[in-house]
Image 1 (cartoon, rainbow, N blue to C red):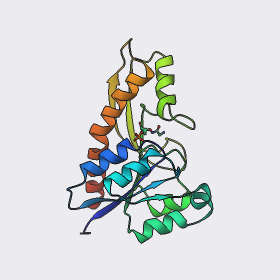
Image 2: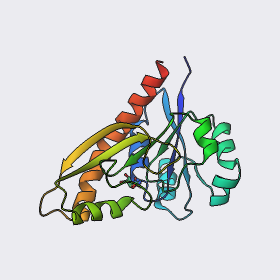
Image 3: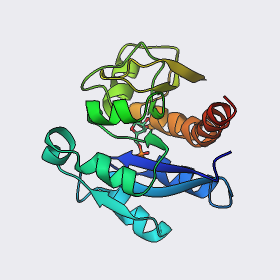
Image 4: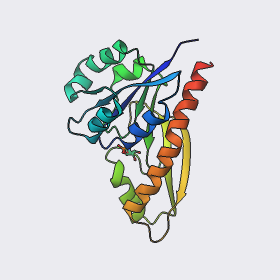
Length: 195
Ligand code: GAR
């Protein structure tokens, strides 16, 4: 069996899930967070990486879509598995081909509802509240060439109360994400190593 599974986490924003996942695996001898990657130089995930002592590499739109720079970087680090945690661009074809069924995303709603281009972060929670939904939740899914359409691996729900606002719903969703995302990543990796 392979010695360890190396993960790269891609994020465009705050990076709180990236931090939570890194802390969850900190003492794991077989699963290691090797790097963060961001497409936003000034995103807070860069600061979190520094505090966590994790390398964080910035790549531009050109790097992602017109070169093999990201793929080469991942190959150099011998990355086995890619996690999108608040990463807001489509994953380019060269990465999808190199990591078949090994790229996972978290979405802050119950897909297929409230997914697709432009549906991210607070936009999702604002729409859910505006539509007076009674529940929302998280979806963890494999990544393909479309926004939010890969195979669903896991969902968890929360109730929405009449007093909830987009902000309070975001807090509920983040709690679910912190609780389940690291565990689901661990399970997917264990299952794929046992195949
Ligand atoms: C998370 O809630 C994640 O589900 C969402 O962005 C947030 C990132 O927070 N992702 C999407 O909306 C993807 N369509 P974080 O940067 O603090 O982890």
